[in-house]
Image 1 (tube, rainbow, N blue to C red):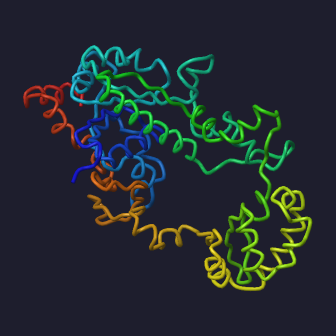
Image 2 (cartoon, helix red, strand yellow):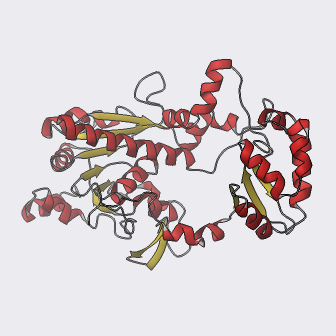
Length: 395
């Protein structure tokens, strides 16, 4: 069985993370991705996070399942090759600053003139319009300008807090993938391609929809507390290991009090309702901290599970990758790597009963442009034409 995007071809000019991870998801869904890289070193991501053995976790994560083609698109000859490749694909992707592809003669209009139904995805830092449209930006600028760093801080006078590097890029990639899928569906219904734009700024704003909706209503800037609420947060068990509980409704609050053998809390006016529990957070947190410290984590998790209370261990990566649940559902998988043999990688977060998605194969390493000849042949180039492009240092 083939993936849901079987038969879809993607011409991917993007580099680093936002664009490349979007096309990784498309590849996992069954699309064939032709990754176009610079001739002088390829995607800069190849040189990031390289370990002593030469393995780049950065490039591997963001380019699995693709075929590599090097191409100099700075001149007329390379532009013609790119446009000719664009005739054979459904989707073209890029994440340069707005205007760069147009200056190269490779904007949406140029591809559409050769392929009327093509979909072009442009992923930028700040969006296609407005005074900041052509400014450079990366993950950190998205987190900062989108308000996330302030949301994660502990107050108006506190220093900003950031998520680990790449989280804004990853959210932007997911939005890019959603946009491409929607455009493909629209094309199926209307026969029309289109130009789709996503950005780090827009993705970060969308990520915080609930908080920004509140701010737009009442003007109150939210900040992070150490704990979100006393009953929707983490606690340390008696063995020094952490767990979380998720109690938000009266039934599970009552079940929690019984499971923790704290029936007196049910009659305490300070904790009768969710709003009251929030207003008396310090008092309730102290009670629960003391109680959780009286038994080890596994004992608490068993007790909470028996009471049907949402709960979980706070896992490090060793625990996450050791979770049977994650492997059984395909969230991790084994793939073959041309240099490192069988390796474990993140799998796919979806399940399809008729058109299953699969974890993409290894990234196009170590040979840059290894698929150039086969891709060009599929695009209609003859052996003589391919030899001419090589002689001219175009590929």
